[in-house]
Length: 392
Image (cartoon, rainbow, N blue to C red; front, side, top):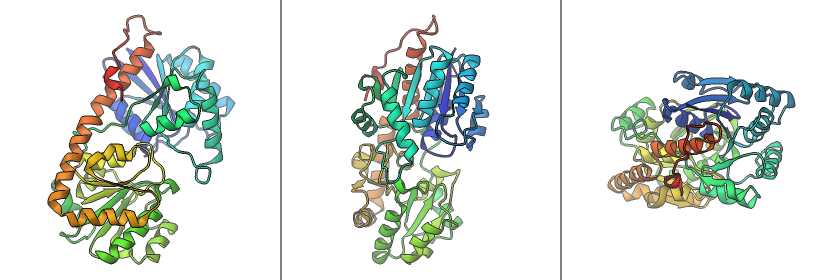
């Protein structure tokens, strides 16, 4: 049995956290045992992990900078738990987890990179500092560095991360759980009091400068002038009518009666399946999970050309420049005017693309192969696997 300890900054409802839960849920329970340590007390997804027998603990950090006492506590937990591999997720956990692993002994560490470009105008100064420290320590602390996108790998090479340790394992999607839902279109429209024949364009993203909801709202206003019957569905953390800045943008553009702000939802496959078009408006992404989920639900996508977004959609959607509401609105208009048959064919092709490239089972196999290879140094009966199927 290979024991993997995952160290992550939070267990909130965001991309990397969701992927950790999917990976842990999909792993072979006869060969692997998982444990999760969250640096902070944000534990939205903890119950989901506990339900499948994964132990979840929190260090209770109040800030994202390493607290020496808590690093030592994590080192003690590592010595007590005796994992064969430690997988850390995101910059702060990469630094804290690797330092604790070094204090605890010779446990191989996998760093997880789930960022692309860091912007000092948007990202916190301490995140920039932690990233710089990780780049400096990347040659000494981790055994492997796994990026969730090709864009992340390229950027972190330029940031002087240890080139020979970098590889890509993309995000994955459970196609049994995330799938088309023929009833969703009618039921979501009924729930939101949207006319049954109205077209819906949707975005699923937390409220953050990188997600550029202002771009989305301005594009929606442009399209509304041409096609006033279209509705816009927005969901994610802090996407509610209590968000005064978001509401001000919407009201300034005069589209309040066409916007639906749903906050965090637990029925995302249903919502994606109800949309005619899914979109991003982002200034920065690594591998946007929302786009893969929408594609798996056979919903065509319009994405901004950031991170691996263009690679993910391929020929099944439209790619536009970030920060350009005119281009975003024009891409939506093209898909609307193309008609339901074209959108249906694009949606079918989108799901096939996810099946071929991003099926969760394939991604889980890649991680299990990495863990097995690294654990070979700590377990006598583990043979190194062939990792060729994970190469991208």
